[in-house]
Length: 429
Ligand code: LLP
Image: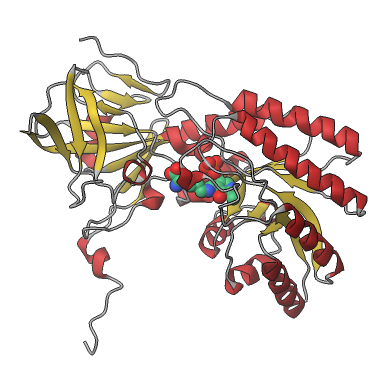
């Protein structure tokens, strides 16, 4: 069967092997072992630039890459070089953003339950924005800032309570979610904040969830945001930034891109509202994670066994749910593609080595006749992949390599058995 070209950056070379920008994935698997995350640096740059350009008709935009999607130092450095800011949700992510040299003014700190030490780090570091999610957090920030003799720049996260169609785990802007403040509580937060000596009220924040491709949901949420902005204007509060959060979905399988529709919708609405409410020229913040990195990476995994039970064929591979959680956790269907041989018409379930029935990457996957030693690539694993991995079943986490034109670099070493126990202690030993 004729091999098809998969993606712009993934094609089949003259040996019939799948490659990323000409780098043979069979060779990479032999050289670096499996399971192996392979990232395409150029794809990250392309995605970032596409996102940035979609908003370039508005003069003041900050794209704060959501570090949680992939906080690898090399990945974050590429985005910092491109000019991205950072959306962080923990002291760890803040540490990484500062480590790669992101200008603190371009750092936004979100999170529903930020710790005292984390807030202290953010205030001391004089970052651009802390988005507050409770009245108690606001009081805590005032207290810490006062102790440090600093001023903290804050926004309030509104929970807009709009319907969103995505996996329930990925919904954050509904009544039942823990995130943000409802309209009335958010107003109260602004009233309180305006009176606080060590707080500078700078903005407003929404984030309704992740892997959302219905642009209408973003529009409804933004309308709620502007309702609050309008109320604040009446109270004499002028905001310097409007933070629309992240959440733009991709089509796993690479068929459709919703970015243009997303950008057009939000920009049109924003322009109209800015005019109506006479808001000046606030900075617009976006916090994309998945859109920027998801399709930059594949996970290479080798077939250990093939078997047939109860009339079903199973391919058992060396990557598990500990290495890549999304299928087990969200039932996510990631494309699985043969690397060393052409496509075929057999149907297989693809399972990992973990002792859990959820450790299945796909069912009824169309593959060629498989045998031990074959290689498979799981697509679109660049977001929420390695960062959600664990050592479950005492499995060292996989290595990550970065392809950047001709250069291949290890950007995360494979963990070892010693790593598994390096933090464990036996009492009195
Ligand atoms: N901003 C905030 C406040 C967030 O909570 C998130 C993601 C983002 C931005 C970035 O969202 P993105 O553009 O990547 O959709 N592990 C899940 C996704 C969890 C997303 C959590 N928050 C998954 O693999 O589907």
